[in-house]
Length: 193
Image 1 (cartoon, rainbow, N blue to C red):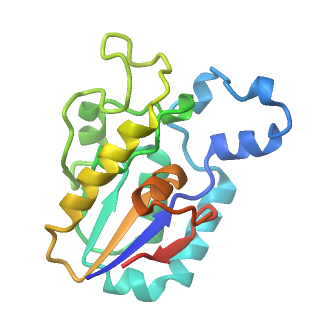
Image 2 (cartoon, helix red, strand yellow):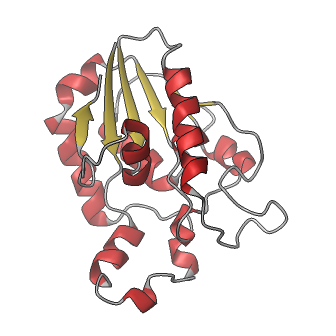
C-alpha cells in the first residue's frame, strides 16, 4: 500500500497568522471569520498547482481520507477535481484544537454539504475537542488526545485494502501521526508508506 499525506492549502487563518507572527498577543483571536477557516485565493491557487504537480498520484489514488475541516475539504476538492475516487471524512485526522479555526461545522451540516462522501468515526455532532454544551468556545486539545486519535487512525489505515491512499489533513496532525516533523508547507504532499 502507498500512503501519501497532503497538507491543506493556505487558509484564512494561516494568512492571518503569518501577518501576525511577531505579535503573540494577537494569536488568540476570537474573530468569527476564523471559525473553520476556509481557503484564501492563494490557497486555491496552491491547490490547483498541486493538482498538476501530483497528477500521477491523483490519477492512481484509490481512496481519499480527509479531515472534516473546510480548509481540508476545499483543498481535496480542488486537487482531486474530476476524480471519481471515493472519499472518507473522519475527525481522527482533524487538526489539534488550538485556535478558533479548529472549531468545525457540526456533523449534520457536513453531511448536508457533502452528501457524496462517507463519514466515519464521528462520535458526536460536535466532533472537535470541545465542551459539548458550548461547542463554539475554544478549549485547547491536549497532546495525548491527538496522539490517541493518531493511533486509532493508524489502526484504521492498516485495515484498508486500497493500493494508493491520500490523506488530506493538517500540519500538527501529520507530525503526531508520523512522530516526526516533516515541516510540510501548505498544499505539499509526501509519500509516507
